[in-house]
Image (tube, rainbow, N blue to C red; front, side, top):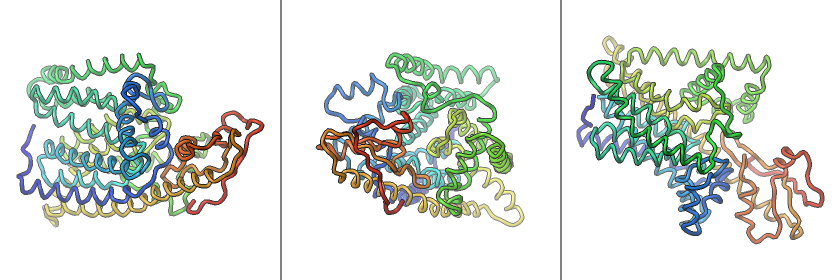
Length: 483
């Protein structure tokens, strides 16, 4: 059922509060540097002529994926301001604020409650799980596909041909941003069935009819992708997919925990290596790994049970939010690796379900002790989330500074022209932020354009080949302040 938006005065007040919260979240990112894959993606996105733009759409890109729109935007960034980090982070920040507004508008359309819409969108705008996709330039594809995804749903809810045609075009753009968009036809079909009245058969027919153009576009996109030779995530050696019940349960449990608790920040209390050490234990196999998995699943079961109780009192709208979260998260439940950035889009539905369930519980309590005004207790998790993000945003700021120091140290190392330089002890990660997980060699190509020697990541080459070639220069990075 479609409902009207809040009146103009309350809507303006809500948007002002939402933008203020979002601004507090994104502000620290504007001072961050570039790290890791950023350098590889920016290098790949260079635009020197029209032929480069054409290449983005006709050849696979980074790690074999086919994501021309993020490449194009990175190329535009570089053409305007070079390697100055501010512009890259500014665009990410603007996309996040736009996404927060889109979440607010969508929540208004389906929740029937302006307060729920405000709480959902503010929680989305400041949630600690979004630090990685917003603060890491390389994760821009997550922001782009999420914004396009929500915009498609808003257009579909208008139920007119013009809006539908715009939605079809946006769907193609979303597919060009990231493969996550392949779930759009499923969600549009389910939304069409939900909004239709009549018999179950009529609802199914309406869902198929509404989603049919999206299926056609998806088939055309798949054909083009196949023709350019791009990998699908489930065929990429970089990703590692698997349809295994235990893997799905593990990922579901891990993501459920991380959506509700700032796991990385809490584990940092015990030490900066605690989270990666636990991750390594979980992936290693054996009895200890199995025990850790059981602990994760047990905690997740408790949290999911609590969410189930909230949903039970939240009604159909809460179930819509959770269904959206599960559908958009489904591809990531099949992956061997996990990343907080993957929950950027699914979290929108999750937060809607959470807020509606929390309000329902508070309404029940209000019959005896509380009033509806206690919905504004949602300000507490919002404030706590902002405090956690302040901790996590420092990781990314520090990671960028360490990356700069690495480049300075290596760049100052004197080498004989023509003799390759192999660098060791390169810092990879700092807590939940990347330093040079990848991208070291691309960074050196950017900052040492006039050098006559190639510079390589010695640790990675030694790991891959087992030996370092003869006749090369070797440099071991020393102490770097802050790492």
